[in-house]
Image (cartoon, rainbow, N blue to C red; front, side):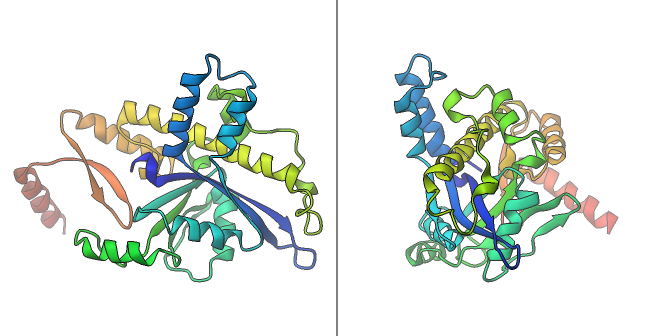
Length: 287
C-alpha cells in the first residue's frame, strides 16, 4: 500500500473524575505522502534542516490535522471519510496498548472483530460510517471493489515493529530537531477541568508527536521497501515483515504483485498459470 493511504495519528485523553475512564479530547493525524513531499521541499529550501529554523517548524505544524473536543474521534472519521481511498491505515505508536483501545471504547458500532493478542489490540478494522456518499457511489461503479462501499480503516501499531519509545526512535532515526518528540511536557497535568484553557501547551506537543511518528514511519517504510519489498502497511508485526521479506528474497527473480487479503492487501510473487495449477493440486492433496 502506498504512502498516500497511510496516516500517522495520535490521541490525547484525560481521566474522567467519577469513572476514571479515559476520555479523548484531541486527535491529530497526518498523511505520510503529504509529509514526505513537505520534507523534500523543506530539504531543498534549507541547507541544514537540522537547525531550529522557525519557518521549517511552522510549515510542518500546518501539515498536521487536529480535531478538538470530546467528539474528536467522530470529527477525524468525518475528515477521513472525504478521502478518496477505499482502504486507509492509521498507525499510532503503542496503539496496541492505548490508542486502539480508545478507538474500541469510542466506536458507536463494531463492524469488524479486532485482532487481540497478549500484546494488545494489534489491529482494529472499522467501516467508516461517515464515508462520503459520492465516494460510495463511485466505488459501487467499480466492479473490482468487493464487499460494502464504506471506507475501510485499519488502526495498527508501530510499537510492534519498533520497541523503543517514540523519543528514542526519533533520535535513532536521526530526525531534524524540529521533528523530534517534545520531552519536557507533563501530559498528566491536562485534566477534565483545564484541558481547554491549556490548549496552547498540549497542542504543539500532540502535533510534534504526530510529526515525529510520521517521519519515523517514512524512513522505516523506505528502508524495508528497498531491502525486502515490504512495509508496515502489509505487516502487523516485525516477525511478519521478516517472514514475508524472506519469501520475497526467495522469489527475488519474480515480479511481485499486490493481492487482496481480508479487507487489506499483501505483496506476493506473481505465479504463472502452471504454478497456480500445481499449487491448487498440492492444496487438494493436503485436504
